[in-house]
Image (tube, rainbow, N blue to C red):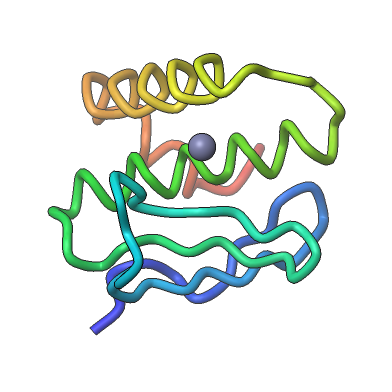
Length: 101
Ligand SMILES: [Zn+2]
């Protein structure tokens, strides 16, 4: 069963998320297919591994469409840092679900 949502809204685009075992993996736990607007995340890792991989691929999407020209090291670091930030500040997450006032 897929852990992740089947679709994400990023920069106003519908990005498909395929959460399945990546058979051809070789240190690859996810990838971003720009022409097909599709992120793939390997489904065999832990929940945290899948979430950090999803974040990593989302940063790739933002990098590509905003022409940030991040290095892969930057993409890796930013996704790891956001992941740790969210994990260390759990009281913040429910606020994103509240209606704006
Ligand atoms: Zn990457």
